[in-house]
Length: 122
Image (cartoon, rainbow, N blue to C red; front, top):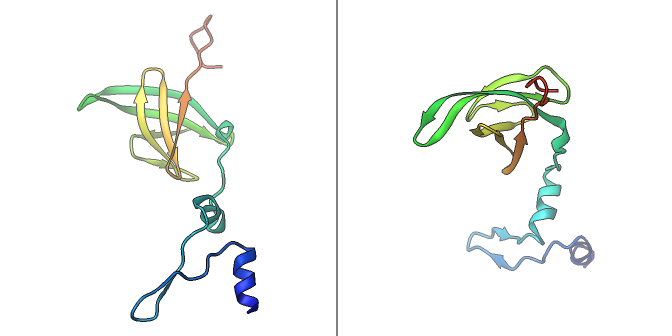
């Protein structure tokens, strides 16, 4: 009886289905609670800085090249499309204006800013 009320309080639904082999299937209350349960954290995009990019050509209509990405003020790392930089940030796309990276399935756009007088990054 106590387990039933505990499941109701923490919003774990009571088992709706049991397989022929006795396996119990639970449904999640919502996707956000499941992500929090398994340790997904939100990512502060201010931790990322695009320090530079080089477009080396195009392949299949998409730009190919290298991006210099700085994470948490550490030295920038050069990565190509599809490569990862800690803590699990993947370079997805490169364009003349910036790049698109992904973190835990969420896409983040990074734009390169230039100092108009010198043409250099600040």
